[in-house]
Length: 304
Image 1 (cartoon, one colour):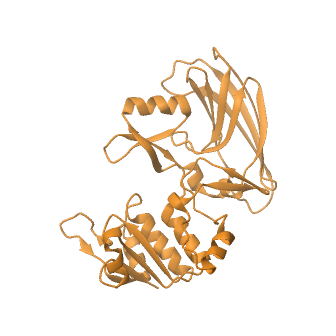
Image 2 (tube, helix red, strand yellow):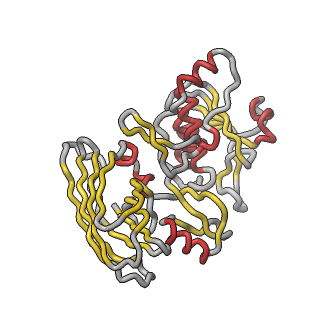
Image 3 (cartoon, one colour):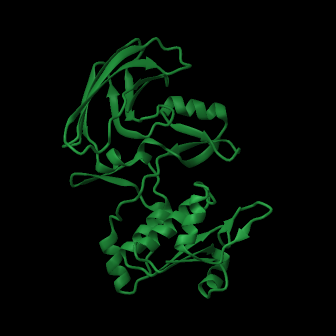
């Protein structure tokens, strides 16, 4: 786990605390300790120490830290990790003056989903490298170069576990209402006891839709995308379209690396998950060919 302190003037400190297993079999208290050191490339001479304890039974995280060498007090801090270059925020703190301490309850999703510690979903506008690095130091963002078009912020994209409004959506569907739901993947929240808390993440819209469709007992799941169907060796001289294909065959192509994570990958994974959860058929096609695909004249049809 990484602790990052950001002071006025956008100068940052980083302290690394290695995480143990997220969900150990037996309850125990895990203790962490780390020196606080300036982030590489900054002129800060600050130093300090951070200690923390994590109770795996209650999922309570407790921390205490001190630092010296900042010209002004630290105004915010983030506990994240485990990779300091890709900071997936877990706990946010405000108005941090040395010494500082606090507690937080870590949700099951935060403790168990590795995606929360590995932001990979690009969001927001494109920046130049200089602008992106400035944002990274000022706000603690993780940034990556995206498709050679510039740099973008990346945030975690955890696996959706449930749809909060499922019961309401189910009642509307049962009464014949045309329901629009899970737009953009929905607003990501985690449960902390009986309370829902928002998190800085993006839930993939295809995965959220597949989950909702499976939970509602839907037979047919349609994914609309830019391509008229799924292709093997996409955009290569020997690209080949897929028409009707079984889930087992599609899974084989997925394991062969045919579907990149930032392109068709999440759509194929969502299709396969929907079929594993009891669905009958998935259609992947473009909005322009949607009616033709429903008639069986276009698109890729994945069957169980």
